[in-house]
Length: 478
Image (cartoon, rainbow, N blue to C red; front, side, top):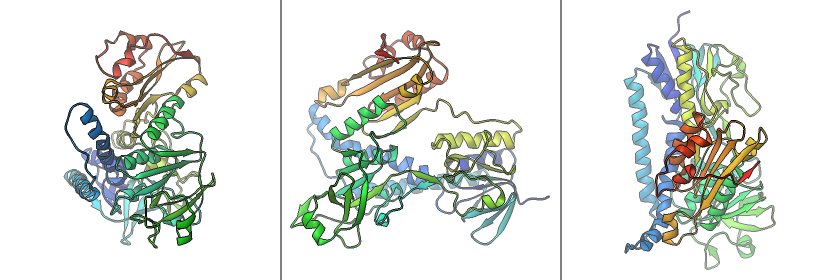
């Protein structure tokens, strides 16, 4: 059978674009369809704009620090309009680069929605059918909004970047990395931030000691964090609400200042499980993400879809249909951009280079850009002690730069070590630039370094990271 393409990629995110380019460079005839903007979640509405906002929000503390170090500087207001204009210009530039890379790789770009019709056919939103020997689904994920009355008044992480004005106040629902990152970002930009999380501690799945210090640091910086708390009701605020509620925003003349959260201009009234009633400019849901598999024709074509909407694949990213593969967040394996890229590269090795390559999802370093920042690789203390006896090497202290500036911020350096093999099973860092540090520590952990390998490494002084190689005695055995 003759096909229009050797490979048809659905989704223009980092994973799909990398797979398309590398397959084309290997001699395949490739097309890629994207219905929105090239670059996907990471470039357009995730990692990149979020990190730019992290950088912007960090300057609010720098003014105080600069004065503590002898600089004669004055605080100034944050101009959201100026920042967001420049941020969107940067996103446009990056999208243009993605398109140039595809063009330069001879990948046919199709600006349309594509869905699977059968094992070798996709149907475009233009009505045209296109055939391919192989189909790769890389459609990513999307924020989930809870099914509750008034939920349509809320926003998600997708909407944050498109706000016309910074809100005076915001309620963030959720305790994962997205909720906690944006709580720190918006707090740093001058927004009055309240965060509700129904669980006992934020950042579920991360090391307990590390996430506890992050929560403590967030509160110290001004985030009004409520654990064991959720929304019961939300709706547009009324005049009666304004008179009786405990306001979540600055008041002027009996009314909230600069309200923009709902159609009537009075804000969003929220009742919490702890009994409080408050009014906020915006309510942001950060309550999880779901794979983008709705109305894709996958099950009709024979592709297995899991209960959360994820495409079920094997270790080679192949679905139940031999000609159809899936990578990235749509598979709900590890939702990280570098992982999607790795999966795309492994797919090309397997399908177009005749070198079956499974993706290694073990010991993946990651960073949470909360304030304070968290970097982690390997097992948490809780995970490790359920597997084997471990020693815990841990220290927490005020770093030199913060101590001199009079700040109370503390950092955490933690190693989880196997008693039997002496291998470092996990490394967890809470500190400024923890993401930068964990990238390098991740190499050592991935290589199977032992505690004695760390000990033999000469410390770089004076740095925070030197503590990783100077902790000689375990704090405890678990």
